[in-house]
Image 1 (cartoon, rainbow, N blue to C red):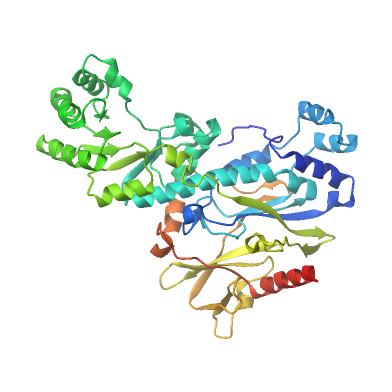
Image 2 (image 1 turned 90 degrees about the vertical axis):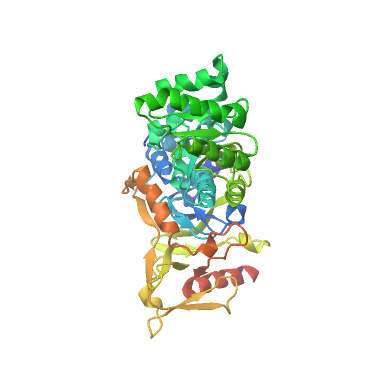
Length: 484
């Protein structure tokens, strides 16, 4: 959904100082290639989930500097008037390629590639990283929590603990992409179509003279959607018994069935087991038990292992803030420059080997084993390389581990799928974001192509992201040249 919000000035100041510098030098017309990628999966997981592309599209479409923006920058007294005049008519004119939202992704592969005049490519760095880092973080965390629930529904409950309004709204959107069934955030439903759900808080129960009265009145108002919060006073002595009485007194005469009860405190495993017995004995085996209260993937997995009788979970602060590791760590790095149609690869070198970048204008293939349908590896190539050009005489493909040149993996009977798609070409959007339900389904389908060993929470298998032989040789030459 396009909210028509101009966030052009949400950038780092150095992007403007560099832009002014590029404008005053020969680099203004130089084409730059930047990659968005990340170096490590949060929570030491096996994969991440890419999200945030729809908001990037909205941002790029609305890039423009207002008169007020120009006046503010002029007041800084460091920008040339020619540069400020250029900003008055600023529009993005470049190309953007990206993997689709919901794609499982891995470290060091370009999730987004930007090809644009240097000033334009530099300016959009902050917002691209902000949107990708936030939503990919939450989508990845949601995927972990949903997998821990083993088919039980997860609803996102975290708005009140999110870092700001956009953190709540876009976080709920990302959580839905990652597999959540819905959200408590009404604005996310209104803007993005993520189903909003919710029933009552403890204050509803406290508002009435008795717990039974509170439950009965709620059943009268919502006879076909009654979920009662049973832990305001005492779950087993009053909460569940009064819920059963309200179901008997109000719903049964109407021919209606209760939807569920919710537990929000206490020993949830024990309470759910006892509550299940009571509901079943009262003739309500179809009444669901919902649990909330500072849950995450580890607590949910433990509850299920303990035999808890929980049908669905509401997860709040630990999902919306990804509290166990609240930074995704995506970066935006120059990979190449182009002048007069000639592309020159660029590399960043660091004493920290993990921070050495992969140079050049690139593309990514995902290699699928035709026998199993599972993803075998990702292959990063130079932009003009084709899989057919890399095959051995027997039709097999040899993959090079970028860290260990002696490690090779030969794949046969495979299908190679290019991951990135064009999103902007010459400044024009050429991609229509799918409906949110379609993105969510795509995410779930793509996760099925991953081996279970990648989905472990502890010591997951390492998925190989390999370089083509040509790209590996280009990287080694650049490293050697810099050492000289």
